[in-house]
Image (cartoon, rainbow, N blue to C red):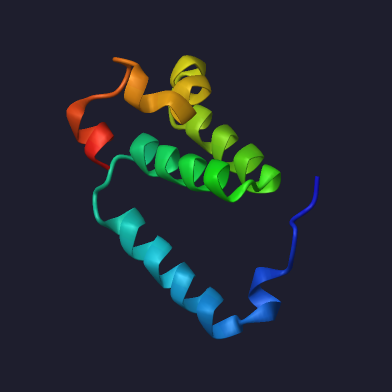
Length: 88
């Protein structure tokens, strides 16, 4: 599996800004599992298999369960997510 495009080469300034945002979120105290769920959901919406593979592995490494990852596309229809997680 390979990335769809070289993001850092298409627009280096945009890539630099995204890295800055990622650094900020990592230092903000947002729970790592929640952060990864956000990235998984964005990757699902964007249809990026490379990012889905990367973020689901990262989420599992952070302690996220397979069950919650599997039902993430239907998060509104489950009781697996807290109110805070649903709000995010």
